[in-house]
Image (tube, rainbow, N blue to C red; front, side, top):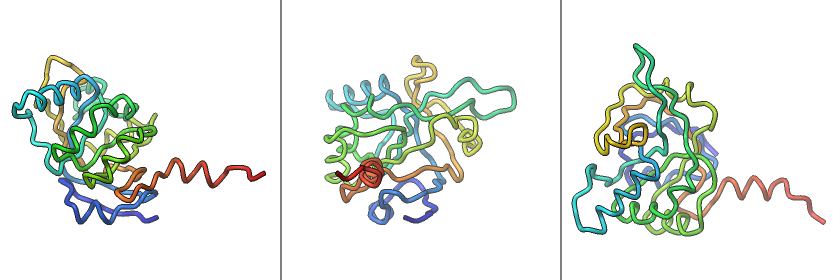
Length: 185
């Protein structure tokens, strides 16, 4: 396990270096999207239409911010439960998505897609939304404005803290943690 500074958009070389358990600080551009936005993205792909954002090598943060206070770029920006996006994630990885940030376990289908499409799943710390928002330097709605807090936003981030949970090699930090403390009979 290492501490690694990475830049987005992600390239295959970077993704190959990341291992479950690595602590990362992400700098660059990421996009926000939650379940309703994911549903719309997949429906757009299924119709053969162009997405409102090119997902090639991009990272999506599963987050809907609270309103920004005066003088702030964004309000509290903590992660939402990733499992709600599991039915859509493989399709978006097939469209080029390389990174996802959220909280909680991923389904076997998502873990298989991470290996197949060479993508990575990061966890951000739940309950730390106010702290995480400090790494967001700019935020703008770029699609699905009608969804309010769940609209797709383009975020410029600097040293965004996250942990690699699932890598392209099939490793799962959550499973490793449970196994480490399992009582042997």
